[in-house]
Each structure stands twice: as C-alpha cells, then as structure tokens.
Length: 271
Image: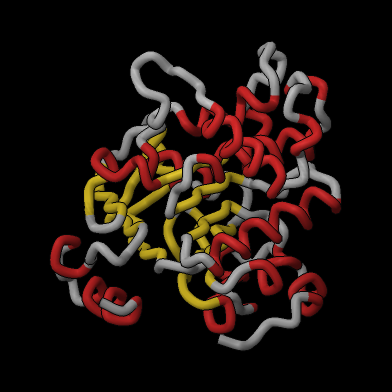
C-alpha cells in the first residue's frame, strides 16, 4: 500500500489494521499522552513511510519528545495505538533503534566506548552475553561509520558532547534496525559532528531505512529531511517538506510567535 493510500484511508476513519500494512515502518493513531491532567500530545495520527527522513518540529513543550517516548513505551499512552511494520510495538521492537537526548544520559558511568556500542547487540549475545570477535568487528564498523573508531577504548565520560552523540548513533547502527528514532541528535554538537550524523542518516535513507528525528533547527529542515511533522500538542501538518513545511503551517504550529523575518529567511513555499 502506498503512503498516499494510507493517508487517504486514515482520513476516512478506517481502522489501523485495514489502513496500515506491514510496509509502513511506523504509524500512530489517536495517540494521546498526558502528564497529570495536562495532555502533552493530543489525538495525533501520523504515518512514517519506508525510506523517508522525517523531522518532528514544534516549539518547546510541544510534545515532540513525549511522542517518541510514547511510541517506545517509555511513557504511557493515555489512548491511541502504535504499529511498527504493521505489528504492535512489543512484537516488533527488535526493528527499532533509539538515540535519546544526550542530556538524559549519565556520562559519568565508567564504561568504554566499545562497550557502549556493543550494548546495541545485547539481543544477539545470548543468555551468557559472550562477546565474540564478530561482535567486536560489528561494533568497530559502526564506530568507523561515525568517525569514532580510534576512540573505541576511551572512557565515554572523557569524550566531548559531539563525540558522545556519535557513539550513541554507532550503538544504534550496531543494532541493524530498520526504524531509527532520534531525539534532538544535533542539539549542542559541533559542525563536524552534525555533518557526520547527517551523512550517516542519509545513507540509512538510501538503504531504505526510516529515520524520524525530533529536530529544532528550522533552517536545516529542507536540506536534511524529505518529510516533516509539525506538532504543538496536536498535529498541525504532516507530509513532504515541499508542501507541509510552509509559512502558514509554521505560524499555526508556533502560535504566530515566529518573526516574519525568520520565516522569510527559510525561503518557504506557500501552503
């Protein structure tokens, strides 16, 4: 089923089972997340096609990270459903890799870079957790893809913020996943790290993997992504960047708080 057919089906109220097939890496329907009495994500429907790179954007506190965490079961859903390649998340979690916000990680934990990356292999290591040469080679290959192979034996806490982010991306690569969920992967990193990360992510897209990123830099959306989802508690737009990333949808999502000069600099199309 094509992405267009999926969107048409859901717009007409069909169930997830009939509208979402195994060819759709990620679909959410009616997803609501609440902290106490306050909803932070409200009744969101969205599909993320295979081989796409989607930026989830919106103002601070818009529910972007909460959406990803609800998909992963890190925070509970109040209502709604999540399917991964047409199956419930619980039965398809092996196909998902997650890169959390760097600020949420305890970088003082005494462990080496190579050990962090091999954490992505824990499902393949078996009950005894025996690390074989092929496991180390796979981890080193992932580190090489992000330009960090020379740091394999370094303590993770000794790295810069950008280097730490590359290591966590390497861990995700080691999993061999089909769906990559990243929470602010470019936040607070240097230009070299940002270039290394986007190069890897675009290579994943070329390999028909699906990439979904919570993203904050509006200026790089058109260069980095082919799809976009705009959210501020509820979804305001979703689709190809060329059509969904417009001055009108941005102002609606940000409540009119974006300066006109800022929007003009983005060289957007009109909705």
